[in-house]
Image 1 (cartoon, each protein chain N blue to C red):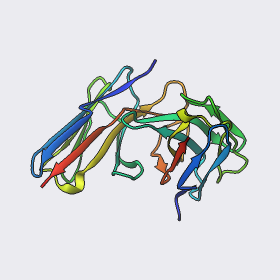
Image 2 (cartoon, rainbow over the protein chains, first blue to last red; image 1 turned 45 degrees about the vertical axis):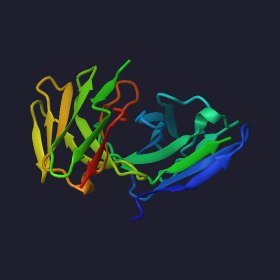
Image 3 (cartoon, each protein chain N blue to C red; image 1 turned 180 degrees about the horizontal axis):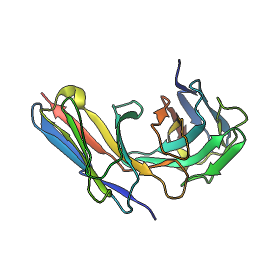
Image 4 (cartoon, rainbow over the protein chains, first blue to last red; image 1 turned 90 degrees about the vertical axis):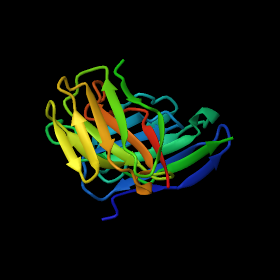
Length: 115
Length: 112
């Protein structure tokens, strides 16, 4: 199993550009998450999904969009990139039964810089 | 809103010294998880505590969950250079289903 994979690993965007961060997992996990990590600020939840076709906002959703058309994939879309979106983005997945919080498995991250 | 706080933010120790990080939640938690992130890496799950007063050990690491299920600690005995990284505690979010809310982490550096 590859676990959770993310592409690209690094990206530099200009202000106003758009891009999609890709995330895929091969563990048949039902839940998937997107976090951003800023220096010294821990991890903040952007969006999450409890299954294909179902997504919901986290703590910091503004400026982002997600979709979950399959169990495996959970792309994060940035529209009109701004310098405030410079961060490291982590995708994670977990298998949760009966809404019990379980271990989250993280991808290697995407380091995004907006100039 | 719900908060998970960790102290200290940074800790430097000499190899062989002990290290402790503390985690406090503004709300009662059904469980608490600990993750480790090596420099340049991604968070990796260490352990989950569920019961009030629970203590679990992993070799030199000891994890505790408070009686009120609002605080937790991670203690490392005789640190090694391989312990370097940031340690995060995380608890279930009250707002986001089964998502986690993370503390800001404690970054441990170890000199030999």
